[in-house]
Image (cartoon, rainbow, N blue to C red; front, side, top):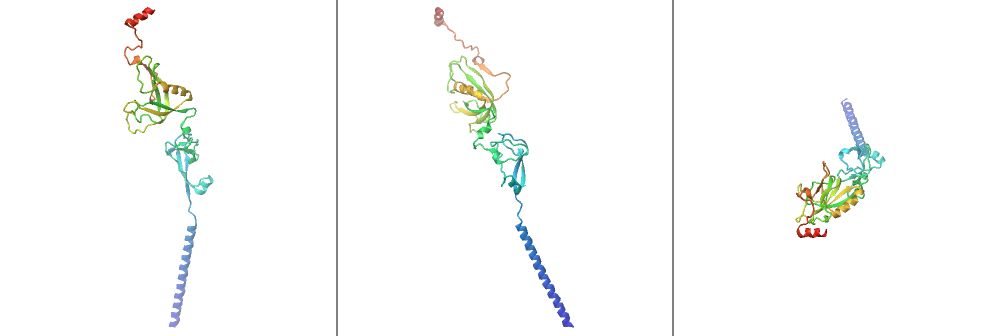
Length: 274
């Protein structure tokens, strides 16, 4: 009797052990299969796009506030012909080369940097042209006039002396006048490397010159070309004037009238001729 009980107990133990081993093997196999499925399933890949939040004009520089960042699945991006993230340039010197409507995607190809062909054309307003103007820098303050500012061009002229060369000195003041040549002219570039906030741009001999690039109407090119070769030119930031600025020598030299008096023998000789 005892041997039968021992046999039954041993048999049940063996069966239980076999069941446990099988169960462990089954669980292990199931876990390996699950991990294989997880590894085999590809992870979703996203691509960064940018969409315009407002209309962007040709020639504008792009700011982060103008666009909205979007993340789309790579498969959806491939439909649009996009294979990787779109990286835009938000530098103020980089310009949009094509109009973009609100809601449209903005691509790198829509931007032109200053070292790329066609950049100057984007800077110029339609119907305008660029002109390099050389002026005296004696009365300029470094950094006061910057690209994008509007300026007024003041011309000092003399009917008897060419004042285009800053080294020329006036000996005859008759007919010398100062007046505005052009107003509200946009500055495109200032050729200066000075970094001080206030620093007169002048050499030791006080005869330094500065070349700036301005945007003007084509009709003004003749006046500018002639003025630059005959007059002394200075620029100031555009102002509001009560009346057009104009001055002649009599405004600064008391009792000056520009009339030469004939006295003494010279006067008598002149009367004798009459």
